[in-house]
Image (tube, rainbow over all chains, first blue to last red; front, side, top):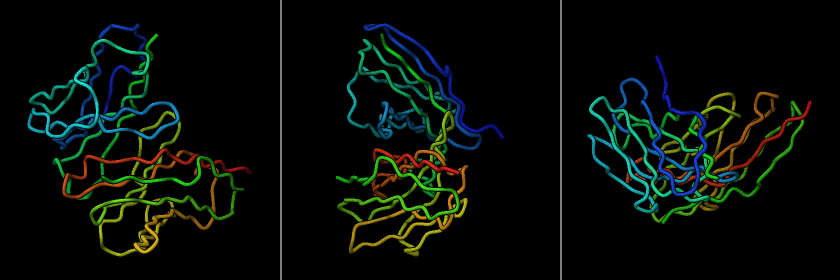
Length: 115
Length: 115
């Protein structure tokens, strides 16, 4: 049973460019959340997708957008990249927006470097 | 608003000695609290969770945590450290009314285990 998979694992972009990160949730899960983890910090909630709609959003600008597909996979898009967007982007899945256990399953992340 | 404060950025122990990682929380509601572990180049993994049941919570790999409302604390302990415990540990709080998927992480405590 595959867990949460993310791609790409590493990427380098320059300021002003756009990036798309991808996530496939754990089998049986229908909710995907995205987190940003800057170096030396804990992950910060970006947004959550359920039934192909953004359900909750953290304190991130509109440059951060997402999408969820009918097969529950998800994309995170970041436009007009800034140096401060350099971070590890984590995808987490659960089987409902609340989850019965409060346990999220995390992928290994996509490490974005903005030069 | 809810938050967690991890009182130590680094904790160093010798193999076979006890582990104590400290966490204080702040929440307007009766919180749900979690400890997650992040090994290098691995995804975050849930160690244990408190959701208003027993105040002493047992997790995986011999870890446990005690919820103390009077002290607003949720410290993580293990009687005997193993080399494989070396990792970064995150204390996490969630407001159950907004959904378990929106987690607020502390800044993390790096546990170093020496032979």
